[in-house]
Image (cartoon, rainbow, N blue to C red; front, side, top):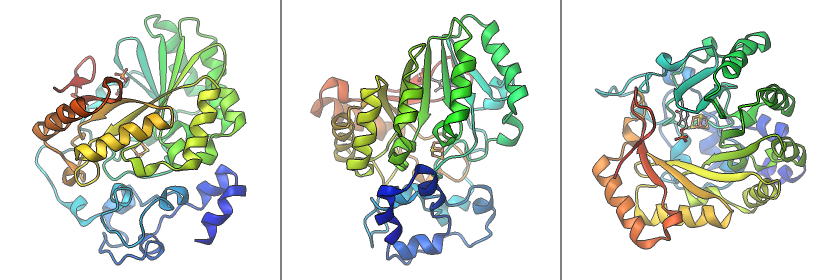
Length: 333
Ligand SMILES: *Cc1c(COP(=O)(O)O)cnc(C)c1O
Ligand code: SF4
């Protein structure tokens, strides 16, 4: 793949611009002949294919069951309706006090800073979120920032989306500057897949920005499989750690992708090798179009029990489910 060879010199924006959005091209690049949702299918219009080229480069050619491919491939199964699966499974619309803010848990407020992601994960619970109503412009952000300033119980702000690192540095910098004016905010956390999808995103300028001494900064990465790592990702994580950023990881338990003790064990060990601690293992949110990824609670419990036996305690993620209306993620176990 010629564009992969060029990545060494490319900026992250250039790498982002080379993202694969066409299923036929994806199949061609991977030597696969797969039946996917027909072009123009409503599911694809709402949530199109999006695969960054560095991630694609880690997929095994000719393998339709590649665990990375399965996370992004728009399968026919997505168009099947399932009882209990809905467009807003977490009922987030109810915890949306101001545009762009979700405030469900004590002490923490989540900012939806962008709707874009470098990758489209087919199981994503945000695939139906009404982002258009929730992406305030700068003057509207003032209203949301005023909300944070008023509520002294909020000590941590979580940047989410979408993927916050898909924003240019100048926007992130603006948020950091504005939040620095609110004395009771001590920690900034970013939930992001970008260091794994496009490791070039972790520039020294970004590390400097995140290392703002006014805050403790935490990056919660999202990796589901050991194969998502390579030397470039390791280098990106090393730069972040050297800048003093705490690195954690959350995964989603996905049928056919990481629902085995071997896969989860390999993931935890690979994370730690990159200097990242496992944080959460999420049970799938019941969002329409994702039922084919579901692993039962019973199987999930058995998997984590097996992990507990074969790994150091700090390498075992917490198994959780997000239930609407509860004051934290719900531990399963
Ligand atoms: C998951 C989540 C958080 C963070 O929860 P932690 O248990 O602290 O990781 C905060 N706000 C919202 C809305 C969330 O969904
Ligand atoms: S990167 Fe995160 S928010 Fe974006 S599609 Fe994947 S799971 Fe969803």
